[in-house]
Image 1 (cartoon, helix red, strand yellow):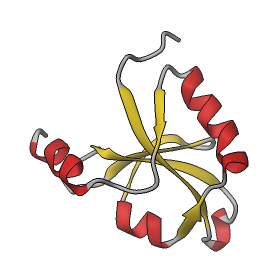
Image 2 (cartoon, one colour):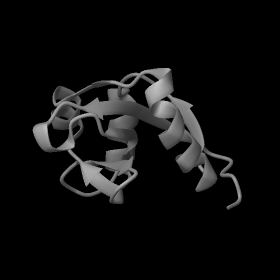
Image 3 (cartoon, helix red, strand yellow):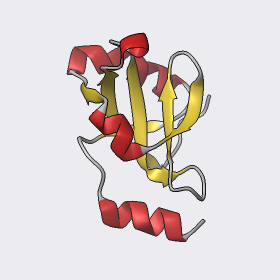
Image 4 (cartoon, rainbow, N blue to C red):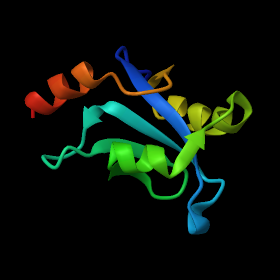
Length: 100
């Protein structure tokens, strides 16, 4: 797929929840998915979805470079220009939410 010219901020996390323990996922903290305020997320199984940012952060830990690499490669193969960040910029989030 053709690479996107827009850099997409992504927070890579590893789930601590019992049934998803160890699963790496990416939150798109500035891409509002719905009017509830959820953000877009992505993981190998299920792929694109929406997620509550605060809840997802509280039930996960930061992914290491080694852990996030396979998912980052998958996202880049889909055309994303990935910008790895560690947390949400709330002003950017609000700007995205207000444009919905």
